[in-house]
Each structure stands twice: as structure tokens, then as C-alpha cells.
Length: 101
Image 1 (cartoon, rainbow, N blue to C red):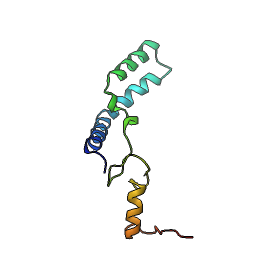
Image 2: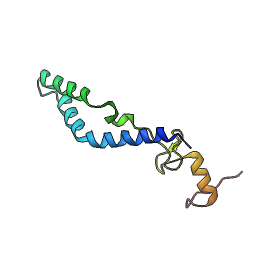
Image 3: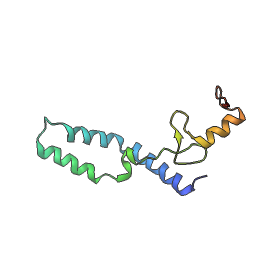
């Protein structure tokens, strides 16, 4: 199980990303629009830099929904390889069969 503080920090980041998503998207559209003047684009970049760092979507860490483990997380199911194996052994994931050869 991951530290609660790490999981909570990631949850706060998710909330910030959701809160600033529209503003960030609008500023990026202005900053990347080459039809606008350079000063206007530069002002948009400055405003973008003033936003909180944790409001960027790249700061979010994929974590296991069950354990909070940060590595080896399957995106499709949202659980780590350890949790996936445990659920598979219990027969809780339909279609998942333990292989043997």
C-alpha cells in the first residue's frame, strides 16, 4: 500500500487539473496561434506560466485504484500488476486465466 500522503497529493493534482483545464486550454490556443501578433502570444505564455504547476495534466501520476501503487499500472483496468494477479487468482476478473506451461 502506498503512502496516504502520496495518494492524496495526486488527488489534489487531479482536482487542480480539472479546475484549470478550460483556462489552460484557452491560453494554449492563443499561445500556439501563429496568426496572432507575437506580443499577444507572449502575454498568453506569461499568463500560462502564472498558473499553478500542479494544474498541468502531465503532473498526474497513474496509480493503482486499489493499492495506490505508482508503477506497473494497467491503464485499461486501473490496477497494478500485483492487484491484477490477486484479483485474477480469486476469479474476480472475467476472462482472465492463469497461464501454465
